[in-house]
Image (cartoon, rainbow over all chains, first blue to last red; front, side, top):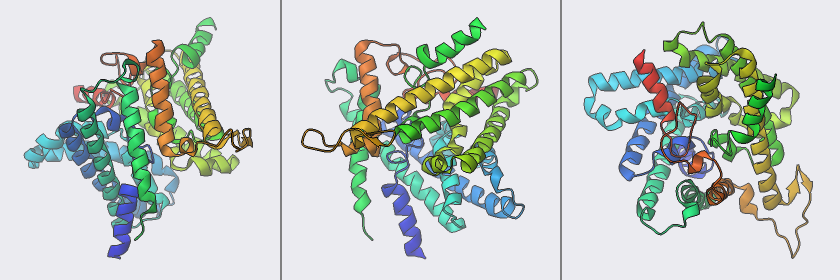
Length: 193
Length: 232
């Protein structure tokens, strides 16, 4: 059981890295990775939201959509629930855990339209995961996202002052960096348990 | 009529969503392993974009400003579900190869971006033309990127073998894997920089409204949405 969950988490975090091999959540991955501090904040917020969203989406799917044969409404239900959930989480943190809110608050609205959140919820349904598996898969995916965005931010900080040719300054060099990271992450494909 | 055609042309060429506006990065990178997938994704998105643009434009005076984003999302998600079912029924092979990226059309920033920047301000006919133009522009871009990756990475075009693997040409397999997607888009952006072409990836400063700008340096697009909600 534990072994299976660990397998799901590692697969989601490293083998099928959400940004580098599945291309979900690219907007924030490329946009918020200018320094490691904001990248870590974004990563933390994503972990928080994806884990909760996976649990809630699973609860809704198994608890409401399946018993009433409404599986076809999953896309509509998930996107609305995620959008509402982010707002609720934001209000809850603001009121009850202000310290955490100060650390993650700015990044929460960014996540509403992050396709990684919806992607994980849909993937969980597709893989027929139960509650525990969904949460673990969500957390693993989010950890993968956090690892990727912090590494990219670190590299971007290091290359900021390097003499980069004019034509690849800005977006192209970031994309090339992401491509090299993606190659590195392909190495995990042979990971054996 | 003339205005409509102008809007279609704008979407395909002068304001191409991928090449010029740099919108919809996720599907641009994810489903361009081969030309067929890219075009299939492009056409699915076009269908959703046309339907949602028309619907949102028709309802633009009915939807209260404060809840416009949730309303748009519901409209878009409904059409995506319809398109998903149609694909599953009539083009099962494409449905299988696009997989989870079909429902993810909902969060494609082209759709909500055009709803917010165009359809909510213009009449139904112009919004229809905008949907057709932007959709076809997206399809053309995805098709071209897919064609290039397929040709270099596998030596095929639309699944037909063009370049035989021999001493002179060995397929550069990395181009059909995930790093290839980043490399191709990076090369494209670098080329646009070099030639000084109009593109969001080499435009300085903040995007004007909503998603109508640059996904690469943006991170502001969902923020703009959030600000809009705060006001209400």
